[in-house]
Amino acid sequence: MIFHLGLFLGFQLLGEVIARIFTLRLPGPVIGMMLLAALLLARPAVGEKIKGTASHVLSYLSLLYVPAGVGIVQYLDQVSEIGPALAVALIGSTVLSIGAGALTFKYVNRLRGEADETPL
Image (cartoon, rainbow, N blue to C red; front, side, top):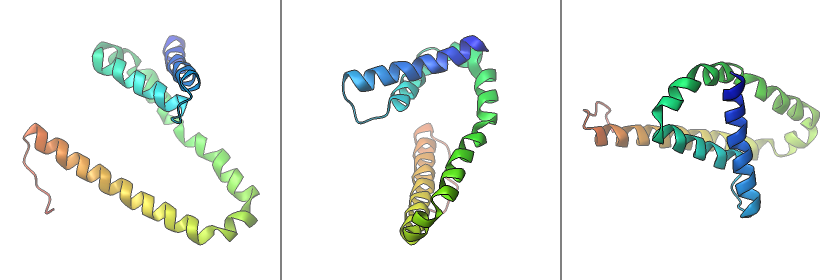
């Protein structure tokens, strides 16, 4: 498990290094995640080995929302000023994300040759 966590953090570090060396606007952890995804596509056996550790880490993902909630409470007066615009942005981005996910799912099903059972 320690090796697998080191692998995750190593890819994050590699992403940070690449982002800073090339002064990219893309965050380092995103670059690291893309590199890890490339490794998992190239070597599926690695995915099977890290599956348990990844599942365990993901089970605690909700803890990352606690600092965001504390930040909102701490700056409640500022949030109340921009509340309506923030609500529109959150609702809009949620609807767009769900729509993009649904369309991607339909596209992948079509590529795989599976029957499309949705009315769209």
